[in-house]
Amino acid sequence: MWLAASRISAAAYNGAVSNSNSLQKVLDHLQLYDHPLLALSARENRGVIEVLIDLKNSTVPVHTYVLPIHARDLDHPQFAWHLQRQLYDGLHDYFIEMFTRTPQDRSARDPMNADSPNADSTKAGEDV
Image (cartoon, rainbow, N blue to C red):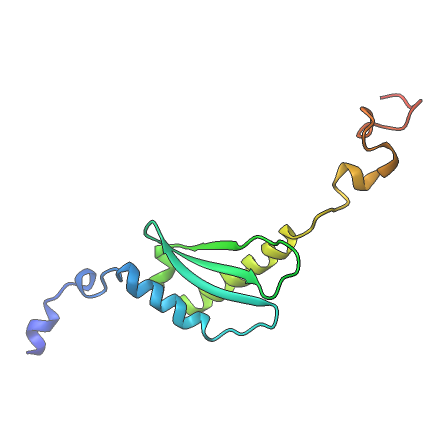
C-alpha cells in the first residue's frame, strides 16, 4: 500500500486547492482576528479570493478596502504569516486612503490662494 502511494507525484499530491476551499481557508484565518473598529470578511470574485475590510458602525461614508489574495500565497507553507503581513499592509493603506485632506493637497498648502493659477509656483515677485 505504501509503495503505491509513494508513486503519486508531489505535484498531484500537492495540487492547487479549489477556490471554495481557499475561500474557507481565508475565512477560517480571519476568524482569528477581532478588532473594535474593523470588520473583516472574504469573498470569491472572478476566481480570486478577496479580503474585505470595512469600518464598523461608521457615521461617515467610507469605502470598503478590497485586498486580493494571490493563489501563490494561498498555497504557501507560511500562509498564515503571509496573510497577516498582507492584512496589516492593507490596513495601513486603508487608513491612509481615508484622509480627506493632506499637506500635499493644493488647498491645504495655501487655502487663501488655492484657486489662483500660480498656487503651485513660487511666491509672486520671485524668479522662476
